[in-house]
Image 1 (cartoon, rainbow, N blue to C red):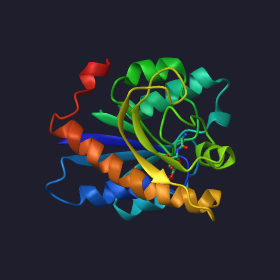
Image 2 (image 1 turned 30 degrees about the vertical axis):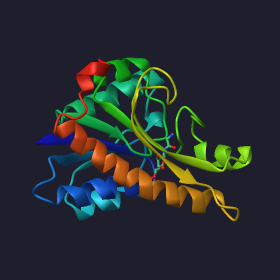
Image 3 (image 1 turned 120 degrees about the vertical axis):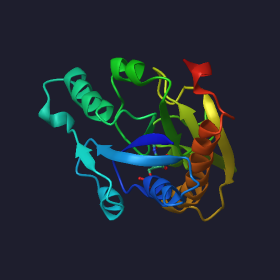
Image 4 (image 1 turned 90 degrees about the vertical axis):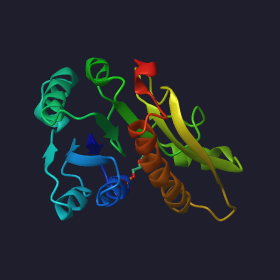
Length: 195
Ligand code: GAR
């Protein structure tokens, strides 16, 4: 059984999909804790499933390195097999990425390497592309540059706004995330290859 710590900053719909999947006795992973850099709206999903939460706000620390140390300490307390950045909207300091690699994954609302960064859906719409997508990657030192574990195209339609396109992308993203964790658990994906 894989243990997961999920880090969020927002509504946590990807987190919710993992919590729902974990209800199935045959699903080979369990969310053991949910963390955030703020009092995240998505914590209510964790509470509904009786999963503990923790929050480590950057503003409480003198610098990003110290914030990263504290976040890492909280994460490692749960001895997770995988740490999932699921809408976690802060860049982790390099020493935190190094400590968690290669068991640190990120979900991203674009077909990487297209549209990296914090505004992927807005950027895809602004570029006028006919399709965007969703990706699950292993986190490395760059911004959304790590090895791609799974990805899928999502068409852009004429009347799309940032929110309608993002919602359709997230439907795909949630399925990719659950499937990727299954693939890791059953050995179809070997994260040691990315160490
Ligand atoms: C997801 O689309 C995730 O890929 C994105 O934030 C959303 C969170 O949704 N993350 C990024 O853009 C990171 N660069 P959720 O809170 O409903 O799971």
